[in-house]
Length: 222
Image (tube, rainbow, N blue to C red; front, side, top):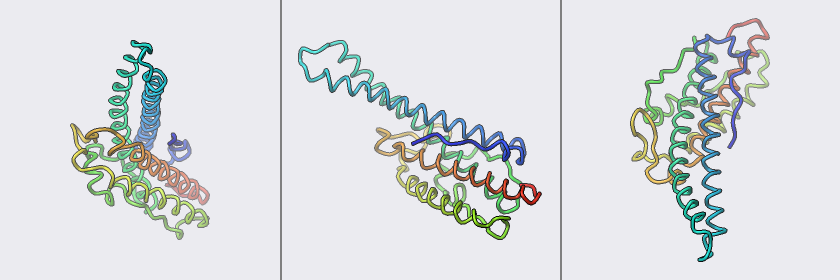
């Protein structure tokens, strides 16, 4: 698990301002959501460690144990909420990044991603919203990078596909397009789901930067 680089300034300048702004915004939000999940996990781990070191002693610190028990329960709820938030953001980021990457790669005008689409809709039609974007060597000045970038995208997309199948239908929608765990994050949303989508989105953004830089070498636009 990690944060990821945002859209480069050079790539952002080559794209329509509203498109690059959305990608940077989504990328930044995902990084913040990831950090929030890590913080929630740390809170829960601290409480668990306290219970493990003090809870076995029948004459142990009563109020410290009580604090740890309540903190542990609170941390579980906090982790579930933050994992849900991270998952929602990561899936939308992946869809937006794929949309822009495909447009630039295939010579179309990139547009802002429609945020009205719900998370459930995005997962329900993964091939349409978060596809594996295939790059064409014939349009590159230096075709050598295309195979490497395509392989990285394929590997990341394989993880996305596996992650998507791990989200049960019963726990997908609560409110406007959010995914909610039925019980605990480890049972259906675990960190692997948002991490996979976040990584693929970041890979798509990185590929987008590479394409734009490659085309800039011959004086072409995005």
